[in-house]
Image 1: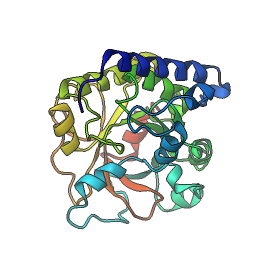
Image 2: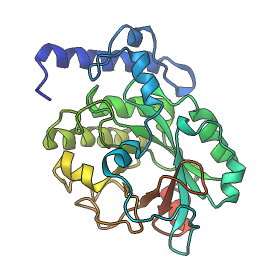
Image 3: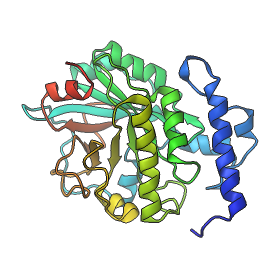
Length: 292
């Protein structure tokens, strides 16, 4: 994807700022895309914002990883947690209304819920899913589907925080997660060089840390990380890793991390959405949530 001309970069920046301004005025910290957003068109697709938001509803953690990388071996789909692995899952609006007590009964101990994408999409099921998990006694967190082609990382971190991604020191809320994976709208790396992608991710994580006083998790696959960041090791000492690899073993990790915090190991299983293991006992999940 060729470099954008100056006037196009300015237009995108202004659009992102305007969307954030609209969101800041929304009640209960939930920003909503207003008329200013609807008057624009997606720079990535040329489609109307309504069409893009409709597509965004189908984007969830790993949807593009599976499409590009497939499934390897025969990953287990109903494995329970063990002494050193805690079972959890992640969901999005794609799952709709979820029976959270049933998920807890099937062994779910933590979950991540998609909150936002880019700067103009909020999961319409988020409040029910996020609150439902909490009511069922499941430790929960929120994640943001990155769109590095539409605004800065800082703008998307702000949008995420305003729309469900904030961390709470209640012992039951996991830090927010940044989902960076293949672009569902076009070029796999969103038209960015490895250096620019690395800086975009740093812009997001730096903003999240400054605002929430917790480091965001980074969700990705090793193949995408190598392709689009040049396998940078920049985040291994600062941000926990949530890695996607649909196989019987976690496999090679991106540079900088010697272990994963969470492994998304299967797309299907006993729990709604994708199946995950936290790399440690339940006490480590509680520690990540900030519970003493």
